[in-house]
Length: 298
Length: 264
Image 1 (cartoon, chains in turn purple, brown):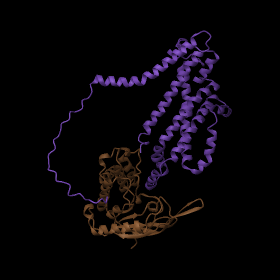
Image 2 (spheres, one colour):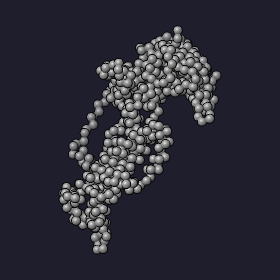
Image 3 (cartoon, helix red, strand yellow):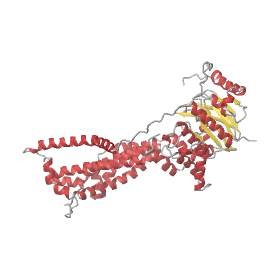
Image 4 (cartoon, helix red, strand yellow):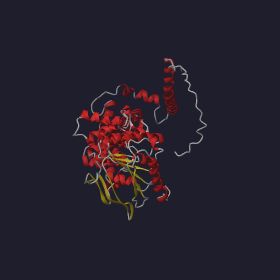
């Protein structure tokens, strides 16, 4: 700032001269066909590798399981013997003899109930633990111990308490999904920058306004990380829980297929479980990107 | 006559475990209405702590802050702060950031339409209307600071507190914003307390400069009146003897008598 200004004499008066404007050709939009080709190439680059890997896996599996004495059916046999289940997922012969759609929707409904409960209670408890030092000191050690208990270990206890399979399964989902939600929410709340708290203090936001206008948006990325882990865990737990409690549900379907030695049906069910777990994860991730847009960027 | 804003024998001690650190010792001074006062000192001397005490964000150990003869000990919109790092909420647009403050402060006093107009008016004061629908991440550092200023002005504070508002900006943007602040002060005649470590900025903007000694136990070393007529022009002042003399005084205070000894 305090540089001595010597050399002023050296600056010569430059004669004024009108600058000529060079016309630049407007960049041409590539023709439609080329754009479509480019777009297809992008798509192919993403779709072809997984297809190749899947095809190779199926081929190896087919070769390994084709010979006599193989314990597992090859993919061709899986499809042929479960063709009825694949083509008609909606049949209902009463009792437990239902199409896969009904089993999957029963499982999804249980997950939805347990998970919704876990999300509400988890965010509430996480907020409490994140906001209050005393709540954290009191509750955090308990959470840290309880979260390591495997989901199925809760099942006998909940059966004893509820004396019914349905609420017990929902409870197992709840208790499985809640820990990551609590822990991530509390970390998110604790990480709210002091600046935002100062802004809230100067504006004299009350507790409710602070919760909705500062806390939730600021902690949203953390909360959604917890929710995403939670949905994955609850889908993991439901299959195991349903194997034990019985009734309509994909877990029971798998167990029932095992008992009747329908290995192909088990494999089909696993494919569905995997796909649905993937879709659930994508849904929560999608909601997260919509809700937290702008939040992470600072 | 009682002063508008009075800092009365303020001591601040931070206690951590068994060690107590005296940060501020016996700070007493007063600010008149419409006065622009800067606090200058080396980093770590407790300037920001002092500002936070006036804002009510940090409690005093002893002493008190009086605004219009009433003690203030908790934060409120009558002492709006422009924070050092803008502190805009990143999930709200520029408009919504200001609107949040307007809605909270004037929820009873103004109708919805008046609040909308008042928000736009304040964005207009800092020339940010063009970016009202952008999010903070999409605008430059100088623009963010302008929006922070608009948010503070929109609360119609009795005292405007500026916490090194231009510290994180490049020199050109800073000069531009300083001119804006001067123009706004001229227009609105608000009472301003500004923290700074920039000597030129302090002399250019202030009616009085409060110079703080180095911490721990920082206190007011000297108070300097800047008897320059307003409106002030940056270029004209560069050769003004009063300006240079004031600048000299502050520099002497900071670099000779209270040289910063510890590593920054």
